Length: 147
Image (tube, rainbow, N blue to C red; front, side, top):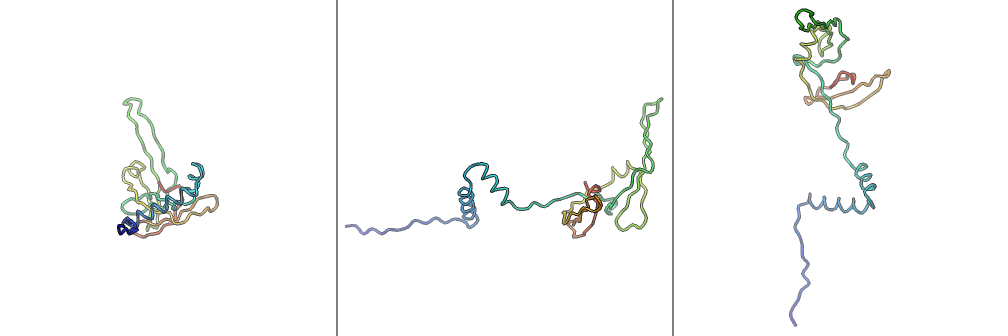
C-alpha cells in the first residue's frame, strides 16, 4: 500500500479580501430576495458626510447677505444694451460693519470653501448649520447662505 497522507490544501489570501468574502456570505445568507438584500445594504451602509460650500470674498467667509439695496435692471431703448445697478449688503467673517458690494462683482469674485456639516438645528423655522472647514474653523450659518 502506498503511503497516503490526507494533506489539507490551503489558500493564502490577503486579510481585506478574506473579510470581503465573509461579508458577502453574510449578506447572501441574510437576504432571501433582492428587496431584502437592498434593505440589508441600506441598513448597513456607513453614514455619508454632508458637505456644503461656503462662499468667501477676499478670504473671508460670507456669513449672510441682505436683500438688494438697489435693484435696477433695464434695457436702453436706443442701444438695446442692458444696464444693471444692483447693490447687496454682505456680512463677512471678522467684519463688524456690513459691506456693500455690487451684485455682479460679488457673483464674479466669490470663491467656494468646502465644509462638513457637523450639526443641524431648526430655530424659529430656519435651518442653522454648524459647519467645519478643512482648516478646522467652525461656523454657525443659516442653510440658505451655503451653496
